[in-house]
Length: 60
Image 1 (cartoon, rainbow, N blue to C red):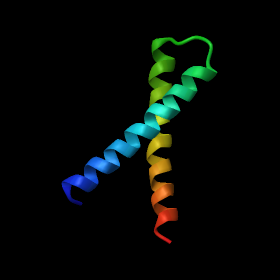
Image 2 (spheres, rainbow, N blue to C red; image 1 turned 135 degrees about the vertical axis):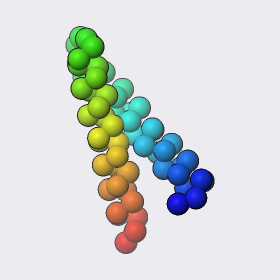
Image 3 (cartoon, rainbow, N blue to C red; image 1 turned 45 degrees about the vertical axis):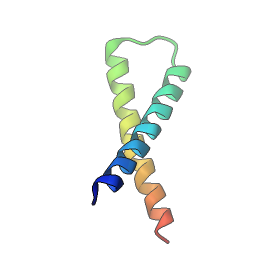
């Protein structure tokens, strides 16, 4: 993996993470520290999964 590919991958995961975190923030009513940690962690898992799924579909 070259530096450009790594940067594109990181930016894609960051974009997915930001979108999923924003969606999560819209759907909850109150935010405390534990909910913030769990929500952002779940969004990161979703972002990595979305990247993997998009890559798997695009490889066909």
